[in-house]
Amino acid sequence: MNIVHVVGTGTIGEPLIGLLADNQEHFGIDEVTFHKRTPAAAEKAKVGDLERRGAVLVADDDRKAAFEELGLAPKYEATEAIERASVVIDCTPVGNEMKQRYYEKAAGPVGFMAQGSEYGFGKMYARGVNDEALVSGEDKFLHIVSCNTHNMAVLIKALGMSADGTSHLVDGRFLAMRRANDISQDGGYIASPTVGPHGDDRFGTHHARDAHSLFKTLGHDLSIYSSAVKLNTQYMHSLHFALTLDREITKEEVVDRLMENTRIAVTHKKSANQVFSFGRDHGYYGRIMSQAVVSLETLAVRNGSEIVGFSFTPQDGNPLLSTVAALLWYLDPASREDKLDILRRYLFAEI
Image 1 (cartoon, one colour):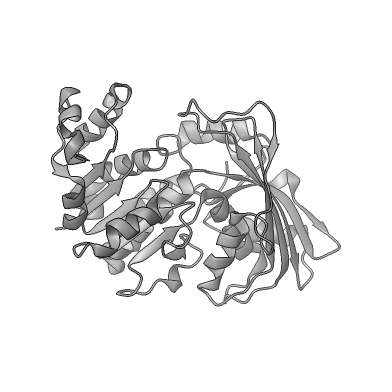
Image 2 (tube, one colour):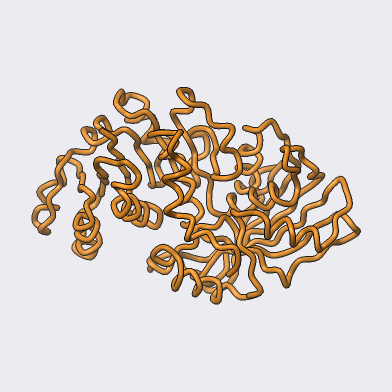
């Protein structure tokens, strides 16, 4: 049996559970289970809807009774659910801790994934960037990079590399302008733009460090650096990029390369709320699954070889696609591309 177990029901976990449950038969999944740690009346409707769509609730033994008091019915205990799963997808901020406590000891699953900030969990992966780096039977632990790292990486690959994988990138600079919190979250909002530190001497923030690690799986040692600022908005992350190449390039070629890349959407829109609104109306439960949305109006070529512009980050959407792609690779690499076709409607050429 192909059983997928998702740990966590937050901004990544909840839509992922729903996506897998909705497409369970198409993906060749026999059962989708999910672990929720805390029983809460405010989240009863969310958990109940995931159960209605076919996902199976998992809880810690000492919290099972509290879930039952809410009218919910956990079927498995947390450790049991891990052991019986084919693939485990951790969507919590403690993936590395869970790896040490449970995943490394579990004999049942063929693969484990962690999201976003869990550096060191396993090989870095982003759909359409380093698929060829995955090694069957060897890569038991994968780290799905963050949404902003997806954005950086796909821009580097589309604009800084040849079709044969040769890098022409001399230097890459990025400024990640992050939303304060998700529209589903009450906490964490800020009153004004808040700048972040450059905690890494070589890479600045974790975004460039993670993108470097991602391309290192393909044998590249890229010169890239990132900064971050958090903005008082809930709409979308956005990214300013400046890519210096070892060759001359025209703006027309830049536009052509972006439009040819099926992982990138282009737009004439210049505001995050307009792009976000498009996702709400046309995406999967509001989520665009393209890796980046580049604003064509902002593109420029400086000194003949430096590409400058802005790109919006489809947070949640791009890690969701990479997570499903990695999951299908674990379950059956030969049928992965055919099964992913069902999600291609959420990868847009233009927004």
